Length: 221
Image (cartoon, rainbow, N blue to C red):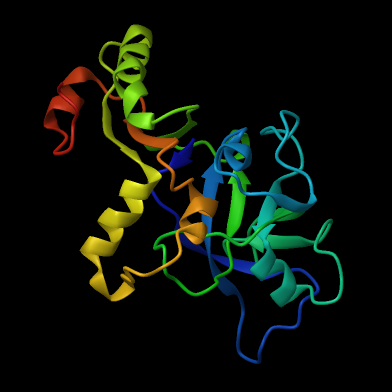
C-alpha cells in the first residue's frame, strides 16, 4: 500500500555539509507497507526492506534510493546514516536500505532523490493505493478485488482500478511535456511492471458508503 502521492519534505542529512545558506534539502517522501518493493520489482541494493519490527515504538527508519545515497554519501555506505525529517528540529530517522532508482511520477523523468518510510511508523489518515501483482492480465482480477473489499467492508470506497501502465499513460496525457512515445518501458517497469500484471486501486480509508457516493471518482459499479 502507498498513499495517493508523495510530498516533498525538508530533510537534514546528519554529518553532511550542505551548500552555504542551505538549512535542509527537499526530497519526495512516500509511505509504503510491507511487500511494496517485491510487488513493484524494486530491488534493495544494500541493507534491508522494512520489517514487522519497524513499529511505532521502535527507531524510526527509512529506505532511500540510490540517487539519494550517492549524492549525500559518496564513496561510503548510506546504511546506518541518519537524517532529520521535516527540518532541523524534526525526528531522527535511520537509513536501513538503499533501493534501486525508479520512475516515480512520469515514465520519462530525470533521476531524483527519493525516500520511503514504513506505514507502521507513518500512519495515513486518509486514502491509500493498493498495489497487487497478478500471475496473468490484471484486468481479470479487478472484479474479484472489488468483491473482496466489499466482503470486508461493504461501504469501503474503492476507485481508480488500473494497471501501472495506465497510471503512467494518464500522467503523460495530463502533462504532455513528459511524454516520449518512443520511450523504453523499462523505467516504468521499475515502478510497476508495464506488462499489465501490476494492478493499482485507490481506497479512501475509514470512509462511509455516503462518502464514496460523494467522491468524484467513486466506484459505484
